[in-house]
Amino acid sequence: MSSETRTLPVPEGLEGERLDAALARMFGFSRTKAAELASSGAVRLDGYTAGKSDRVSGGALLEVEIPVERPAGVEVVAEPVPGMSVVHEDDHVIVISKPVGVAAHPSPGWTGTTVVGGLAAAGYRISTSGAAERQGIVHRLDVGTSGLMVVAKSERAYTELKRQFKERTVDKRYNALVQGHPDPLSGTVDAPIDRHPKHDWKWAVRADGKPSVTHYDLIEAFRSASLLDIKLETGRTHQIRVHMSALRHPCVGDLTYGADPVLARRLGLERQWLHAVHLGFSHPEDGRWVEFDSEYPDDLATALERVRAESA
Image (cartoon, rainbow, N blue to C red):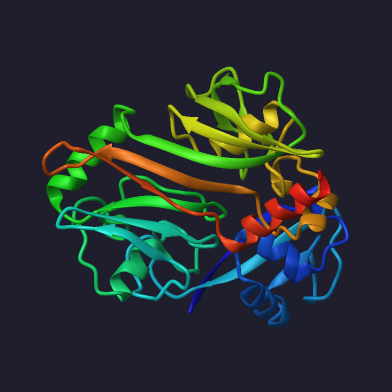
């Protein structure tokens, strides 16, 4: 079995965390997978082999040797995805609610479950358009973000949905719990995004980046946070997370982009509070407008109730 090494510095917000917990947060592994890797000697901190219960320091260099069981980006492994539900299906599209910790499709170094593999395991046939490992995928959600995705079943749907996403006619809306209270409480962030100049695993607002536009509106204000409804005009990687961080109001639990780890622990969060709640598009069969909604998963709903109770 071949393997590849991935290297990231530990975010300051993870200072003092157990190694297996830090691995899960940084790389999207399950706690079980993280513990297995650490126990096998596949993890190093600043060049030294580390155990799963060792504590990490902010800024330390974390190296993980990840087994690769298949040619990267080629083979789709049909594997059930616990928690992934089908919201709608017809001859042309499947709309699913993706759980956190699941990638849209296989990619180099990713050993976890995928939407494509989950649909294959459940017996769904999807479009053969697109690269072999991402057939039917017309848009993606981050591994650490849950919520609605549409997958093309027919070749016609693939072509038509790709066009709609390119022309920005799809209605994509998210809810985000962010720290503090943005000023103004409703507004637009129009700031280009590109790779971070120093840390290539992050993204940042940069003058030479790609155009990126995010609209937000206040849903509910709490003592320590605000629940926002967010609509995207563009779909850059980590766009909402980067733009909220640029406003100095990062998504609660998003330690990569400056969130307060104390608040995240208090609310019981192990990922950013961000969920794709609404998806609307013109159906590729006849052009009629269709819309779908997704409820908050348990971890986000619990955190929201806790922050609401603190403000009572």
